[in-house]
Every structure is written in C-alpha cells, then in structure tokens.
Amino acid sequence: MKSYLAYLAKRLVQFVVVVFIGVNITYVITHSTPIDPVEQSISAATSFGVTSPEAVEMMRASLRQLYGLEGSPIEQYVSFWRRVVVGDFGPSLSAFPTPVSTLIWRAMPWTVGLLLASTIMTWIIGNFIGGLAGYYRRNRFLKLLGIVSMGVHPIPYYIIAFVLLIIFGFLWPILPISGGASMNANRADTFGFALDVLLHSVLPSLSLMAVGIGGWFMGMRSLVSNIVTEDYVTYAELGGVRPRTILTSYVMRNALGPQVTGLALQLGAIFNGAIITEQVFGYPGLGSLLISGVHAGDYSLVLGITSVSIIAVSAAVLLIDLLYPLIDPRVEAR
Amino acid sequence: MQGFAVFRDLIRYNFEFAAGLVLVGIVVLMALLSFVSPYPPLDVYVVAPDAPPSWDFIFGTSSRGQDVFWQLTVAIRNTLSFGITVAVLSRIISLVVGLLAGYKGGWVDRVLMSINDTFIVIPFFPILILFYFIMRDAMSWTSLALITAALGWAYDARLIRAMAMSLRTREFTSQAYFSGASTRQILVQDHLPFVLPILFSTTMNNINWSIGIEVTLSVLGFTDINTPTIGGMIYWANQHAALVSGVWWWVAFPIALVIMLFVGLFLLAISMNEYIDPRSRLARMGGGA
Image 1 (cartoon, rainbow over the protein chains, first blue to last red):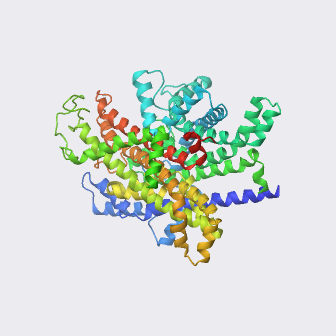
Image 2: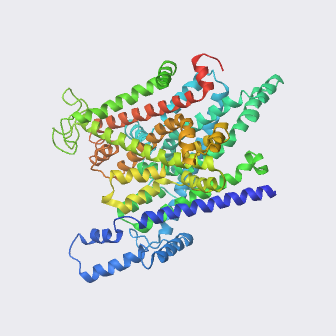
Image 3: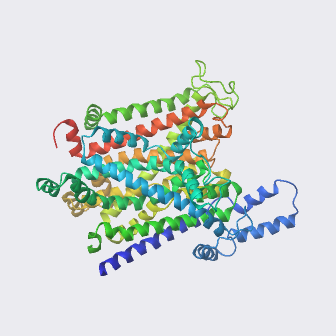
C-alpha cells in the first residue's frame, strides 16, 4: 500500500507539471505574438461604418481587460492563472452574455461520450485482433486484416472522415451524416432519443476507429509474437494448457501493460482527431465549439476550450496511470 | 559503400521498402514537375474552369480556372517541403533532448523527461488553433512550421533517450569519457551514429504527422490559404462546393496523391524499423531466427 502511495504521489506531480507547462504554452502563445489581438478585433469591428473615437477608446479598454492585458506582466500572468484555476473565462463574445464555462459544459458530454465509446472500442478491437494475429501467424484472414488496417493507419483523420462522408452521405445514404441528434428528436422518448443519438454517432466513431485500430493492431501483434517465443509459453503448451487459456491468460495478459501505457500517451492525439471528426460531421461537441469560436473571433471561448482540453486530457492520463497497477501489479513494487 | 549495401538488401528482401520507394518516388517526381509548370501557381482563371479530365487537362481544371495537374505539382511541393522542414527541425530537438537526457541521467533526465511527457500528452491541435487565432493573417508557412516542430519532437525524444541510456553503459563511452572527451563530443561522435537508423524511420513518421496537420488545418482554413498546398486545394474545392457541383476531380486527385505519400512514407518507416531489428531482418533473408 505504501508503494502505491509513492506511485500515486509521483503521478500527481506529473499531472501538475503537465497542466503547468500546458497552461504556460497557451499563455506564451497569447502574449508573445507580434500582432496585437486587441487592435485586430477593433479594426475588424470598425471596418464597417464610422465609429466615434470615444467608442473606439472604450472598446479598446474593455477588450484589453478581457484579454488580460492590464497591469504589469506579473499581474497579467497571475490573473491568467486565476482564470484557469477558477475555471472562469468570462462571457463568450459570440454568444454574449452566456459564460464560456456554460458553453463548454454543454458541449462536453457529446465529446466525452463520443470519445470514450470510440476510444474504448478501438482499443479493445485493435488489441484483440492484433493479439490473434500475433498468435496465429499463419492465418490468411488475419494477415489480410493486418494489411488493410496498416494501409488505413497512416492516413489522417480528416481524409478518412471525408471519404466516409462521401460514401455514406452521397453514394449510399443510409446513415445520418451530420449533427448529434435529429433536429426534431423527441427528448421525452428516452429510448428513441438514445437510439437517434447512437445512430448519429456511428459515422464519427467509425472514422475514429478506422484510423485508430491499425496502431493498436500492429503494437499488439509485435508484442504477442515476441511473447509467444518465451519459455513459459512453451512450457504451458507442453504442459497441455488449452490454447485459448494460453492466448488470454499467458500471452495477451502480459502484452496488455505496454498497450495501456500507450493508451495514456495517445489520449491527446485522440482528442485532436475528435475535433476534426466533429467538424466534418457537424457533431455538437467541444471541437465544433472551438472552430465556431475561431470563426466568430471569440477569444475567451477559444482560450477556455484550449485550457480545458489540456486539463481534461492530463486528468484522463492520470486516471489511466492510477488504474495501471490493476493490470500490472509489479508497478507498485517498483 | 556500406550504405549502398544496406539499400540493395532493403530493395531485394523487403517488398514494403520497394513499394514505399516507388510511391514516394512518384510523389517527389510530381513535386519536381512544378518547376516546369506552364502557369504561375497563384494565378486564377488561366484555363477554362470546370473542365473534366481530358487529354488537354489530364486531371481536369478547377472552378477557379486552374489546371488541377499543375496546381497539384506546386501544392505537393509545398506540402512535402513543409513536412521535411518540420521533421528536420523537430529531429534536432528530439536528438538534443533524447541524447542529453539518456547520457546525463539524474536530475537533467528527470527535468527533461517531465517536459517531454507533457509534450507527449498535451492535445496540440487546440494549441495550433489558438496560435492561428492569435496570428490570423500574419500566419505564414514559416511560423506554422516552427510551432509544429516545437510540438512534434517529444515521442521520438523518448525513443532516443532509451537508446542513449543503454549506450551510456557501453565500454566505449567510459573510454571516451576517461580520455577526456567532452559531453558534446561523446554525444555527437560516439552516440549519434547508433541512433541514426531509428532517426531515419522516425523522420518518415514525422513527415506524415506534420503533413496530416498541415492538411487538416488548411482544410479548416486555419493556415495561410494563399500558399498552394494539398490542404489548401481541398479548402478551395470545398469553398466552391466542388463535390456537390460534380467537380470531383478537384478533390479526388489531391486526396489520392496525399494518400500515396502517406502510405509510401509509412511503408518506408516500417521496413526500416524491421531492418534495424536484426532478428526480423534475418528471418526475412531466410537466415532463420
């Protein structure tokens, strides 16, 4: 138990470091550009029609405050951190006066739901068939599966999503291609609504899975094909242990550890993919919100989503790390 | 001559390498053709718009009156050189961090790896979008390459560190150290050559990664859209609703070409990885393993 606490403390420190560096990157990016975002917003706002100098001056003052450009650099830095810690990113400019945090909370369940479901499914399917392919090396079907998933793997999310959109949107229109649920969905009908949401999530999650499975497949296959040659596997085979037991309890169980670590490392990348997928399929999550914020010039919304995504991803990584000893009990001992 | 022997073996015994080389070769050839393009890349309405593929315009023409084939040659050249720039810059960072952390160990290692792990897990896409949001029209090819390189080194630095840690325990390192070699000399002259093969394969993967970012950001319109790139072409095609109006060749050819590049580079990367591992190399050459 004591060693687990030490492990826990180490992971917590890492979590704090990740959030600290991440928020500092956003700070540096927002404060060290050659372009003054305030003047940009003002020139955008005043390019239509004539505005009195007093109004421009007022606008400049309020924008400077909003962008956190008031006071000395140290004060700016402190107030930036305060906003992140409290989770108060001020009112959204594009959906004034709704607070940014409300918008984020509204979009969060969609993204988390889509991501959680497709990430877990991708991970399980990829590892399972990868394990099978590593164990039954001669199987033709598994070899073919390997070639297909490896061929799809290097293609970026956007292209896959786009191709799926063309196939299921224009060539063979059987699935809804846009939105998180039907516009006229009756939310009182819980089952029907759930089915509707599920149906709308098929294409986005399919595109995430198509890209993701290959990586897990290849990783698991090479891990398993190394483990199969270990002495204890040969011993179990000679001892007459059923092949299925060998595959699940001897081989795959031991290969899972690195794959769980890999999952933690890939979470950020998965989040990136979700942003693009949401944009392509018009899914009402954080990604769509972020991109609409950029188009609307909504500084507080963009900054809020960036900070929240950094914190959320590092928290998810922390969670996986904390669960890791369940899969590999040796970690505690170290 | 050793480099040539490696190359020969790769082509002879490794189908993936040969296939990857052919695919990448075609793409590079396309990029080189841009230098003999009859049209300036930024000019629009130089040919009749919306012409389907024919002998005159083998990839058709776009709704902006550009010859898709020649436009594509310039676009793939810019995209490819973006990928290579990012890969080279980020390789430098990951080499320095990886070799230094692995060789020095101790607190240098701990500090560098904490930073490294942060860059691995951080979702870089929102950061890139934030960057575009701040830069807006000042967003240039160079600044995007710089920030992408700054975000893309971490995973490979960890790989290199793992190798450097084992190199540190080898005898030649001790010998160099006791002969009075400086840290820089040990890292560059003794350790770097061992890391080079894996560096090449990560370069391929990194080019893929950065091109993926470039395409995605451009498609969303979050880059300098006036520099012709693959993503930029898809962006303009989307702006003109090319698929709805039936101008499919405007979208299909850029996507096909970039997928060729992705698969080609990926095949090169995995075949090199396999070659680095002597066990799988011997198995392939029929030496048994």
